Image (cartoon, rainbow, N blue to C red; front, side, top):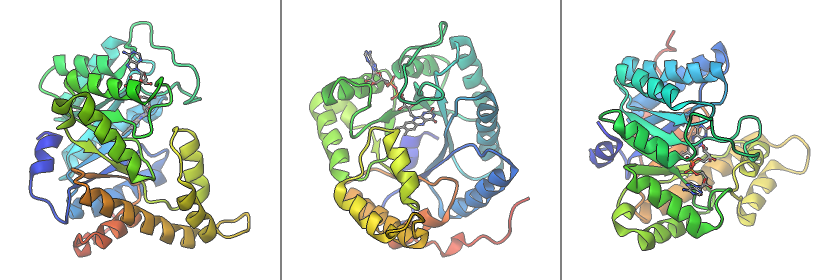
Length: 311
Ligand code: FAD
């Protein structure tokens, strides 16, 4: 099934939700991921997605685990794929290997320069320059359902917000069926992107614009992530988190987490009221914080208590 089909299928709670995972670095991380996967399986996300890294071994893990998600769980996986350091032939081969494992949902991304996400971008000499070309490439290869990235606060390389909107419209016109936004902490940014998209191309604006939400569990790490992504933590939100973190060098993690769950729930409620088609949770491979937000939104999470740790 496609993501668009999944979003219109019956779902628990007030709105469909989805979950983003990243490839774990070691065996312990992989066990943690599988524990989260088994919890989410019982919560019925519309889909789950697995990010794609820059190095060979993390890439291999993304491909392997996405295949396992397709073959060994009830979840619908979306494979992220980036153009970084790949020739067109390699991209074709990767898409083919996903198809062999029954994976037809792919998130087409350009990716960031390895090492320094804000550094200079160089396309592979036999690769693609922009995500839009990757969308076309995947579409040409068969019966795939392609999604793309969108940026409520504008991509850091876009000249301005209008250029950023044009890029998104271009990717949707090229065949992308939906977009998932970069995480943000002010719902206004999402609403303004939706308005810009509607003004630029009403037909493409009808495609799902799925907001990315991260329940914050650490102030230090969210500040770092935001720095790397051209988004901002609104001062009022930062102040709430900083007050919870306390004055010392060691932040009060439990207090920050509690505020983080409140914030994510408030954002989710507003997004639901505004008609967002799905909530995409950046889980960081943990199920607990996202489950708590879902519970607060009225999703019955009682079935989600893990019965056993999978081997
Ligand atoms: P593009 O759409 O190609 O845009 C890149 C830049 O080029 C933009 O500034 C755009 O305005 C500009 N541009 C596009 N087309 C043109 C044109 N024709 N002429 C001039 N300028 C143009 N990164 C990973 O490495 N792995 C992941 O798994 C991953 N997952 C992500 C998931 C989501 C939901 C999001 C939002 C981002 C993700 N990223 C991931 C990060 C992403 O790869 C970077 O933000 C990257 O810098 C932009 O990717 P893009 O696909 O939006 O690129």
